[in-house]
Image 1 (cartoon, rainbow, N blue to C red):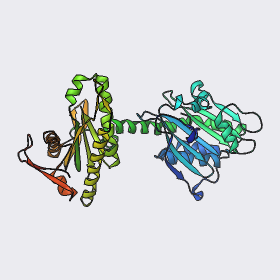
Image 2 (spheres, helix red, strand yellow):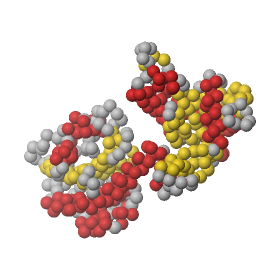
Image 3 (tube, one colour):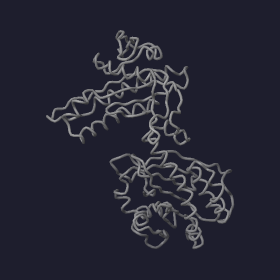
Image 4 (cartoon, rainbow, N blue to C red):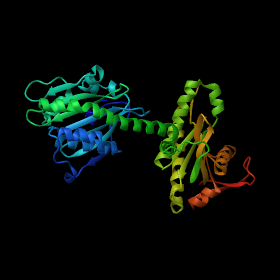
Length: 419
């Protein structure tokens, strides 16, 4: 991943390089002096206690400057394992004194800018790249011409190789007349191994969190990272529970190829997941064509606001799915339909399964009720059904659809819908 690319220069089908967050270290907190030996000692000790990679990288760059290296710009590029991003990176500039964390989408290495970047020989030939930017003609890399136009005089890129052999990269640019001295280059090369060891720890931690978030959800992923992996253990939480599925899924799956059904499922789930996450909810699991999500009720006084966010997410999800253009075998187009049910209640959230294969899941009477309510929405031919408990939490604006028995439940439930 070439972190050198200016954001405006990347033209990809997916999202562009995105700044996730930034940090401006106050001048009074920047190291004023030091040596390369001091920096090595810091990397082997105190640096390992810094858990946030952004702060670690920022501290590293200021210490490198304090140790005498004439750096004006430093970038770190790390590949990762994530369905949306090829990798992440950090970039520091002495002026204006800012460090930024960025993510880079898949496909970056097929872009024209990468193919004409000095990061290409670094990644593909596994070698350092040095380019002096003063006076003499510079290699035909657009980023180097841009750096020289900004006043930089020297450029140095080194491979950062993790223990399993995967290659990452780090670049250094100087704006001092004359650029880097040979002692500076030697010091940077000497730091490559301890830097790789340190950033590998952070990259593995991030990769683990990414995988857990993607496959389990953030709530369950955090619990696994904390060591809550014992079968039968969990906790009760209060939440608004979301249950949805696709109308006519069995009929569709009988008529369409499996590959096409996967495309339809992905489109339907994405159409729902965006408003769920935007509304503060979290998807717990996909069950066939169904989706189970929660909107945690952390404060009962804010329950009405949570209910209204959940309802807004449901309305948006229904609109998103209806807008999908699903082509059927005969070539005609018709809207894909889903049904959504919402109900607040207590959910037991924890580890269930066999000793060698566990799953974080949500169970309890509230989960059963919302599942039956979603099934009722088919019989009533309503795309959205709400329980009486949800209606009380939400407040005015909903309409009663009558009292109905629900399969497996001893008491009937009054169902509500939107006007």
